[in-house]
Amino acid sequence: MIRLLENQEKQKTRPLYEHCFKEDTKEYIDYYYNQLIRENEVMVNEQDGEIVSAVHLIPKQVITGNVKTGIIYIYAVGTWEKYRNRGYITEIFQTIIKRMYDNMDTFTYLIPSSEENAEIYRKYGFEYVMDKYEIVEAEHRRKPSHSIITRKAENSDLVKLSIFAQQTVYNNHSVSLSKDVEYFRKIKKITEIEGGTIDIFVNNKVIVGYRIIIDNDIFEEVLDSSIQNLSWLGKKKKPYAMARIINIRKILRQFAFKDFKERKIKIKDLVIKENEGYFKMKYYHGSVKLEKCNKDNIGKVDFDVTIGELGAHIFGYKKIPGFPTVCREDSFFINDYV
Image 1 (cartoon, rainbow, N blue to C red):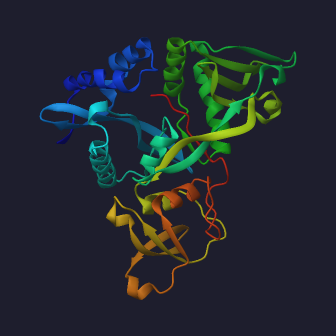
Image 2 (image 1 turned 90 degrees about the horizontal axis):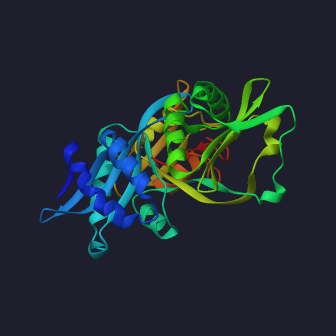
């Protein structure tokens, strides 16, 4: 049976969490279960009264284009080892995704723990939309000039840090988490628990950059163009975040297409039947309108794509040749913990 847990039941999933995520510290798990889990939803698969699988659903505020909207971050997907490979997670994901569609969500995202898991998520319509750049070796990291002060962020810095982040991130990326003060409060707490830091760069009392380090790796780095040469991010990268379109029409309204003309497309979506089929894309009153068509009436299609391929293209990660451009490369910028 698939169901959402009541608040008082959520603690029952801790043994499963600890079973599946052995790399997480006790301090971090205590923080998540004592401070955060009440804000989230937990959907489980029960068999004979026992929770065999669980998926945590974390509400997030994101900026897509110029629109602030609420979406769900899918977190801590796990099944007891003895119950794996029986389709229990598939049942949860199908329920979650259909529920998101009914709730008019735009898209959802997750961060796979391995390439093996990424292949599983592809079956549900997810595709990579963001890479993580590796940190350069210590001997190649440039140091700030005397005019720039580098120090650890204090609580009193968080408002100014949020203002800087919003101005910089929103200008450089089409999709990002809302960089409000609460975002930095949570991240600062995580760094304290996990032994990391938020380092800020200050020039003439003005914040011009920040670098969040967790587990000796860069969780997030945002720098003003004037100090971009101080970046610790190298050229090597690896896939990081996956996303899935939930409501095609809604996401098309939130982005501006470039060089647009009418297209006929066929979309394959194995979970959301409303997204699957034949469509005409038309430019209408400043935005793109999607019209579902009968197969016999649409004629030859210009593109035959999966929902995952369409998402990767829209978010600027992997282009569909000839398809109208939406976001430039590296437009999706969501680093997440909880």
